[in-house]
Image (cartoon, rainbow, N blue to C red; front, side):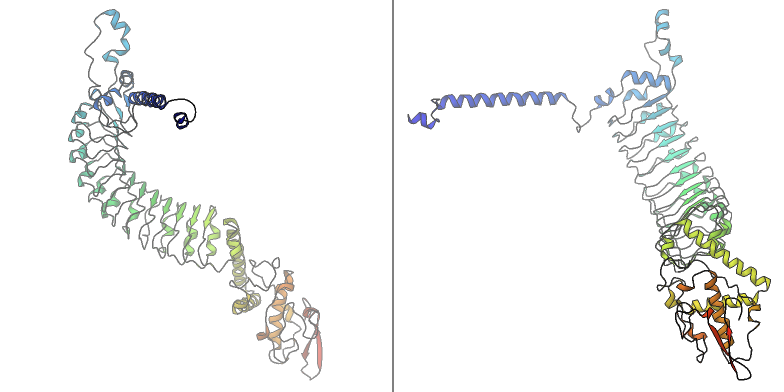
Length: 557
């Protein structure tokens, strides 16, 4: 009974329970063994690659295809070494057909129908070195080895004299064999994303080179003699530590694209204009303080110089770049946009974001092709903030309106309309004097409700000398001056139906003894602030001592 209680009252002995547990453990062990056995048959993701595995990565059908097309693609195969069969791929088969029947059946595989290997792609593998046997592939024109673990190249690579394109990017190379620079047909060389600290001076011996990408390395300088690469059209040197450009860089007369962003440059050669075929110049994220005048760079279309220390544009900068379409000068220290900016007639995009510009020149309005103007992050005072936030179209429209008004004023000046110019100048002087109370831009008064007169409009004064015909010149001192000033300002407001919104203190222009001193808001009488002045009778002093009134209306005194 006690044994039954100890075993849960089931009547099963302890020996039987132990036996069942042993069987369960044995079954679990058997399952684990079978699982491990199956896993052992799989190819694990990370393991040391054997030479035999690399050889099996080149099946016969790929060899056959390579002999037909002349191209062999082994990208992303996980290779740690190059299969030996690749180095003999150009060799003639030993087992040639011996009978007419075999010759007919294998006609397509016959040696005289084979293409020599010209394109070899071994990219995105884990290659650490190349065998000297690579010299057997002397028919190669394109060799692609990017995204590997190469630390060096064999000297025998210089025997591949037909090489035209070589891509060695994203490896761990620090240098190339000196003999590599003697390749006579090399036109494309990519050594980006490596560990180069300098380029060998023999680089200039690659006379046929047209493209060089040495970006994302640790270069601190360029070798002297780089100017001998007169066929190079694209030179990419971004993300290095280059502090100064060699003077003979400007001899690369075929250069169309020069990328120097993210370096440590503090200046550019003064004769950068000698690069007459240059189309795109990238200078972002350097320490450049001044741009050259680019005299001679007639074809330059894109200039990116953001994130530098540039304080101003040279006087002749705009006149030397008539075909410039993109000018990016954001995040600099520019304080003024020159009026000559209008000479960049083909400009499409202009970026002055985050500078110290306080005024936009009216000449910007003449840029007919400008569709993107970026000026955020500047302390601009000449244009209201809400207009700036409306974008390029609204800003240019405002500038055009102001330019048109300025042109009309200049035209009136040439036509001899001195009275009108004088009155306009008086109003402009008044607005300028009271700018502190009227707003930052002299027209944006916080006391005027929105929806009133257009602050972007320059009020023209249409005052004619004939309206003063009835003014008595003998009236007390200050009365005639007051009449002229008030009439001019009233005329401006009346013509634009906005006098009811104008709140200006004109007391300094008014005779202290005059009845209409200290007029505010609508030009109203001191006796009746709700009755406009231009309908009020205006007192004057008769030369004979008699008082009188002259009706001060819109056109006649």
